Structures are given as structure tokens and as C-alpha cells.
Amino acid sequence: MEGTDIVPSGAVSSQSVGTGTTLDAVPLSRPFFVECVSSPEAAPEWGQWLEEIGFIPGERGMVMARGIPGGDPCVIRIGLSTFALRRAEAACVSVIPLDEKSSQ
Image (cartoon, rainbow, N blue to C red; front, side, top):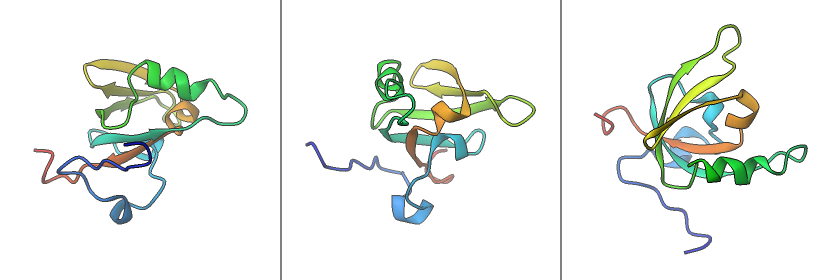
């Protein structure tokens, strides 16, 4: 199944929310599915680390809170775990936000 995009039922298609929606841009309390994880050139280990703690394609999550000022760090619920990520780390996670009607 490598190279196949899996879009969970109830998810908004990536075309309708714009390609490149990342976790750092998801509004508070909006459910999402993880699409993929990437690493910045300056920190190539981040992608593997994020996957090891649960940011894997198809996993459901939600942004629970953001720090003040500037929204850093952000508190993310992924599966049954909760993590605080820096915005730069959250920007490595591409997501598919769920439309509000199907998430209720």
C-alpha cells in the first residue's frame, strides 16, 4: 500500500482544505487525521521521533491548547496520549482536518 493515500471516512479531502495543512495551523478543538510526517533539514530525526510517539498516518487527534504568547507550545491529543509540541515540530505533521458535521 506504499504510495497510496488513505483518507478516513468523514475527512475533508485534501483538495478542499488545501494541500499542505500542517498541525501547527489546525484550530483548537478541531479533530484531524494524520496524513504524513516529514523532517526539516536541520533536524532530520524529528520525523522518526514523531512517528515513534504516535503521529502515524491515519491516527486521529485534536489540538487541545496553545501557549501564550505566540501559541508555543501546543498541546496535542493523538490517539490516547497527550503531548506538548513546539510549533516547529507540529509543522512537520501534515493532517487532514475533519469537517465539523462528521466529527460529532
